[in-house]
Image (tube, helix red, strand yellow):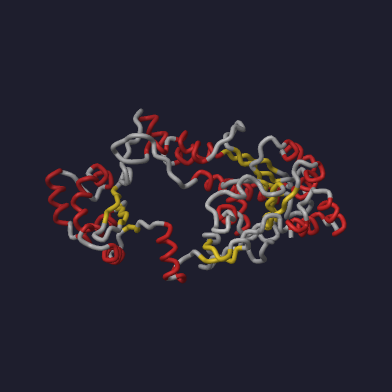
Length: 409
């Protein structure tokens, strides 16, 4: 349910989406206080059992992307089930009539059909490609050219990354569009139908960095640099105890701090004189990145990661440690007060790490709320939103439009 005091309290959003982009957008709206009702077919959609899994078999993926929502399951193949979902989407009221989906080939759930029932509907539709072809993060990332820039300088096959960044960014773009459409409706009374394609988000993101313009004007592809930062100085260094840190010097001040803490100022001054360059210039640091790395490597190799961390922090160097996910968990357990992660009691799983919205109001972030049990809110939503009585809801269970009572409660 919506939480009083949050920015989107009392707003009702119906979400019919799977995997990452749509559900992550719906979760963001729920974190801001909206009553987000996720609608799934009986038994759950295709993402209901996606890895990673808890020891008991429940999907950590599904339960992490659907925190704070309400869950409704309906037989989406039956006319009665479709009418129930349509009624939820187009329910009257100034804080309802908001729909987020990524459905394909469901004409009963498209804009012309739904807006005929509620003309001021706000509908945000997430796609793979803008022409309706399917896509996932891994396919659009490949087509956007990112894997060709990733990996070692030795070259070889393109290197995919494991983070579905374009999915997550698409979800946030959908949220921005939805809120803008609500602003438009508040001012004009008009509904909106917005579409956002995963492939377009990827292209827009890369274009915004100037990478396509560079390829157009230079007619060359950006080279692979391994872990070196493109266009500046930044690279990883191993420490004496097998740790590893990433160090970056984008600004003159960051470069001076790095030289000072490592005691390499005189070495680099001599190098500048020998090469006729100014290493306080970012482009010069980039061009001579391998030489700089070679000079600095010994300082890191002579210290353990704890010492390196302490000295870099004191010198205000721009840096970060390399951690595995299990190290992140151990660090949280060692000092929970210093970690933005928190444990939630998740039905069907038990205590699990999660995080609420990264937005903070007055310096305070709202804690995460657990995800619903699949279908657990069906009866309550139909009663609250559509005003159905217990006898009507009971008949829907008996007719198989809703899941059997024992499985749905």
